[in-house]
Length: 351
Ligand code: NAI
Ligand code: MG
Image (cartoon, rainbow, N blue to C red; front, side, top):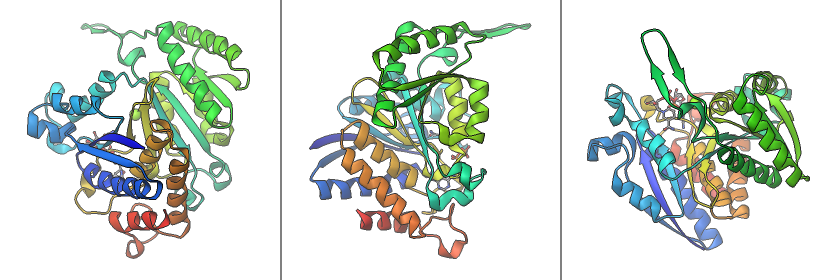
């Protein structure tokens, strides 16, 4: 197959982890006979420096011409005092909105060899294999805001169609996985949650093969810690999803291994590690590239339908961990830590 990918390295360790992930992508291309065509463009701080704009028109145009986007990370102290319009993260918000990437997928899966870093007991963390599907372009973060001397408000609005499309997406995701869906809301107090719950119940009728449960967000916040192995697909709104996905991300203990995707109804999507630009280790060649490499695996699976290729990357990453190879963030002592490139070479050798 032939696929066009726009690569947005961004700031800090972004360019380093993206370069590593691209090497893995090319190894997959060679092994499975795919032609991945890459175009590079600017986003975030790098784009502010070059174009005075965190998401330049050139970047948007290139993304429009491609089948998927791979992003590193944006931000750093250099731009922390910029005006709101000239902040790196503005580029991220804008690219999601421009391409209507309404579904944010955050898988969390335990790698047995990394569980020493988990804050939970091994027997609780080892069964974790869940996916949070967060609505990303609606709700309270985008509702009308106002503030006076004496009060402030943020409007939480969801249209039926916004809920329907994210719920449809979650049912599909559950079907690709273990067939279980947990919908999270606060239907005991919020009207938006009551509409959310009604939509899920309607969709449940159309998807009888999927096991559905409703849960209140405060209860899920507890159960994610006491029994995270219970969950398969968890679908929720923008704000609850923001909080729960960060909570879920610490279960396995290793920020450097968590991938994410932001997708819409078709095959187009944006893939990026969950972590940020880690400015304090940028340029040292020691960043963990696993999260970005696993984001490439998600791209292969969800945008290109290359299931086997995606599974091969996941298998290779796990095998390298099982062999006891780690970058500095996960190594038991610094002498044994591999550099970004050395660790990536191990993954490529596995493929
Ligand atoms: P961060 O995720 O960049 O770093 C948190 C901690 O984890 C740091 O100690 C860092 O060294 C370490 N870390 C993160 N990724 C790593 C990797 N791949 N390998 C080894 N160690 C890794 O979050 P932080 O420090 O809160 O933010 C730093 C900058 O990144 C800020 O400018 C922030 O705005 C930005 N940021 C960007 C995001 C994005 O582009 N999606 C997301 C989160 C933060
Ligand atoms: Mg967050």
